Image (cartoon, rainbow, N blue to C red; front, side, top):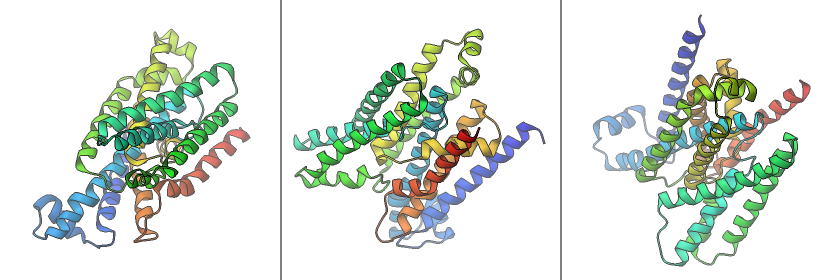
Length: 335
């Protein structure tokens, strides 16, 4: 089988698995639904008002959010690993997600205390600024420190500092609406609306298209800076684009769902092992599909494992994906 046919077969399989996970997540919950009921509601409108409300207003927006934001985090991780040429970096490890979380929390507190509503676009903008600031600190450290291991540790420390400040803000807040930030700060996909789905889809679509457009320069960059320069790639411009795309993707995910750990680190490696290639033109859509499926699977566990209570999705992703990261580090060390 030629590589092109193998890639096509893998993408078809990944798409089928994703569709199956979408259907399972829509059917499961406090109210069980059959595939026929779900299909009737989605394609035919359905005559049962309760089922229609459960599917169209509660579960389907949440499922689509998990796919979009999971894909965004995985793609962000792939771009960051390309930028740093290291397989154990990602938006969560480098503190980018935590910086975005801190900015969103501060923005929401200021707005709520002044009697204003926090719009989705404003939250994404605040998260983007927070992500860029955290990324800026990591880049400053990278100019002084050549060891990637030390860089990753510094990124983790930046993340801990941002998370600690966020927790202090949430803990000492008096307003009940601000106190409710605690669930979001732990990572949650509950309460997603269609308006939020449209915004995150639009942002992710732009970033995805942008990443595909620069896939050839990315491929050259992964083979070495000198090689990329010999092909006419502007390294500085490419690096700026990688930072902007990765930060915007991570910021969008954090603004809507809070920090979701390890998806950005583990998924690119899972995708590479499945497809047996590092070609950006193949890896970019593969990371998105696998990231969406993994996040949706973890969200289904978070919703149902202790039902009717809900576990934070970040806890589930940490338990399932942290061993993948450990295996990557051990394998890299042995090499």
